Image: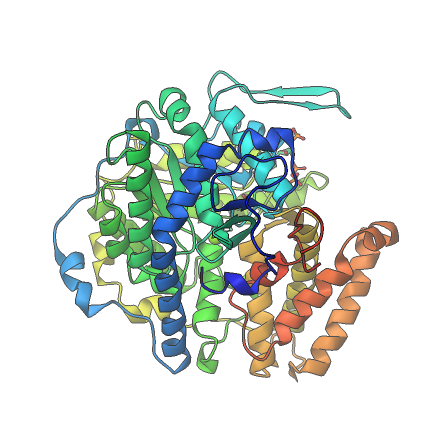
Length: 567
Ligand SMILES: CC(=O)SCCNC(=O)CCNC(=O)[C@H](O)C(C)(C)COP(=O)(O)OP(=O)(O)OC[C@H]1O[C@@H](n2cnc3c(N)ncnc32)[C@H](O)[C@@H]1OP(=O)(O)O
Ligand SMILES: O=CC(=O)O
Ligand SMILES: [Mg+2]
């Protein structure tokens, strides 16, 4: 896998691993646990290894193409529609129709694969639960393995959880949300699973283990004969969708189920991918169940793609919302593209979450969520995301009120008016000011998020908003961009330029503020100093790191026997 060899020092492969019964060429370097062994069975690992061996060279090629595209953008090129695939965009073709069990997806809840949250999400009243191995999960070994155990028990309907502190037992309701699983992106390795001496692709481990253990029970209990269902993150090009399509076909063959059983919604959450939506759907036309506006990673990707374009600097993070022309254009074109191809056009995540101790602030947060969802449903989206169960009634109400009687708007909101959305619309620089408070908030949020991630939490509430890997990325790359170009902070009338010296002072002051806010004890027990080092290094790096979590991943890899992690 490209780049993965740089991540962890991998000692020579041993033929067998203490505890786990592994097939030839597979080595498990994560902690042994008898429960984990029920997931890491020899047959399941054999399946993961066969996917890895089949697709490694394809993944490497796709990652090399990403690097080449980056070089082009860094030399001044702009992403645009590919003339070579115009026939795909112009031709009339359809994806397979949505499976009946997920025709109605008006509200989808998302969350990490943590046991109590899995039960709460499935019971939440949402139509779909997206169980997340990506933005919302810190992929340490314990989280990953427990996540697979939780999903296996959820699919079989046997999952339960005893909250001893509150003496409360959690069990599934009669009626539950339909489960989608989001594996990690192509870029993330799984350093605890070595295949032929190399770390496996994280997404193939996530997909392979989940599919192997659950395809049959899922189709019986959840999918009404279809499935399993997936969300696919962070792709940049249709060639990456083709790999997923081939992975699905290989998995269906292994299971002996018909082609098109597996269904996936692709997140359009990178700037290059917005120019590839038809092409991505075309590659996955037998397995598609739509596209989703992954707005937070999309904003991150805008900065990353234009890292060498000082004429395209972002304003304060809080000002880059769906009202900006480039964001509205992206949502409009996504709806038009999906409905033309007969599949769902899903909306994205409003970051507000309920504020328990302040009813007025809570009402204001809910009003913002409602406004965002009204915009989405009126634009033609078929459903949207909720970060928290407390938001579901309000969001459901909005979609019920505006979506007409049908389960979706695929046939009723064709959005032909969006056919004219052009590259300039999709690239238009967002408007707004840059402020010292923006720099401070990015720093405060970025450090606290990394500190949480290092200690096992991939999604956290910060300043009454949901923060996860995608939102934290915006804070990081925005700081990097402002430092790189020495931008003037004009938003609060200060007119100061962002320099390394100013940033150093901001980091120090924000660390003091974090310590005051979380309290001395929690601060000293947490990983704030380590997080600060990682975040500050990335913000000041001469060249922009591709992903915050790639560097940070080294800090959560714990190889067993304990020896080889770089911690
Ligand atoms: C950019 C993107 O990729 S968006 C998608 C990825 N991000 C996510 O999925 C974030 C999902 N949301 C969350 O993780 C959480 O809501 C947070 C971290 C933001 C806030 O969590 P908390 O501070 O625990 O919320 P809070 O204390 O209000 O929770 C109240 C209850 O709701 C539950 N809950 C909160 N969010 C969720 C969720 N998303 N799914 C299931 N249950 C949830 C809690 O477990 C808790 O349950 P309990 O009363 O039985 O103990
Ligand atoms: O995954 C969703 C996003 O907004 O990023
Ligand atoms: Mg994302």
